[in-house]
Amino acid sequence: SEVPFGTSAADNVEIHRFQEKKELGFLFKHHVELSDALGLFDFERGAKVSGRGFPIYNHVASKIELALWNLMLETHQKNGFHLRMMPLLVRPETMYASGQLPKFESQLFKLKDEDFHLYLIPTSEVPINSLYRDEILEEKELPLLLTSLTPCFRREAGAAGSNERGLIRTHQFYKVELFALTTPETSPNVHEKMIQSAHEILETLELHYRDMLLCSDDMSFAAAKTVDIEVWLHGQNRYYEVSSASNCSCYQARRSNIRYRKKDGALDFVHTLNASGLATSRLMVALLESNQKEDGSIHLPQKLAKRVGFEVIRADGTIT
Image 1 (cartoon, rainbow, N blue to C red):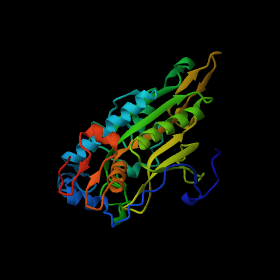
Image 2 (cartoon, rainbow, N blue to C red):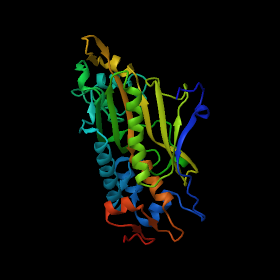
Image 3 (cartoon, one colour):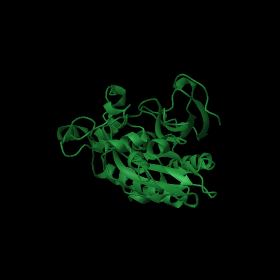
């Protein structure tokens, strides 16, 4: 599909959906209320340790989080993506190459250290994009399909609100990233491949989602085309993005000077693509809120339950 012209999120176009919103049929709880009742997260001690926006995951929530990481990484590897473990601190030129600097300086955490001029990564897209900076790849090497799990750090200045309490918007969260370097001819197909890999995880977790094709003014300036994958969060009574899949064309490659040698010997810039696959904090919210029962318990989807070793979080916080 072509990118629609528009001036705000209201002009984005739904292009796909999986199932429909789950109607709970009772007075459901926000995930913070579920956490208070079941002992899933410790927001107060997290604030004591690091400040607001740094939640602590207790035992049961940690087991679910770890299972989600493994599910996502295994799915993406099955679909042809190769693992990378990336640094969490990067140089300013790495931030610039991916498009974070100078525009998003105010949203980034950076070290106050005379000897180390480094930034904490807001996404592993940033270091992965610079893996091949100032290099020339061979066409036969492409596409390079990569995946990485890292914590992500964001200041989220001015974004806090009562409707975004809990896990909705935090300074630190975990995310599995998909990243690709391709030829211009293959980038549309690779974009679709990334989206499908993210879909597979949501469908494994039996979560309703929709794909939104972003309009021209709602996309990042670095992207030529973006599809947001959104899940319904009952506690917020709205859709929230859990993945943003972007084809950045040659924008990042030009900033990063990443080229490839064609079969005829000519040089051209690669295309870079990235997608969340997925961000786990909002995914956790969707799982907890959509799988709660009237008695206060939570029943996990079958395939996730097999991974964590329990299916039900009872109203008293015990698991079975």
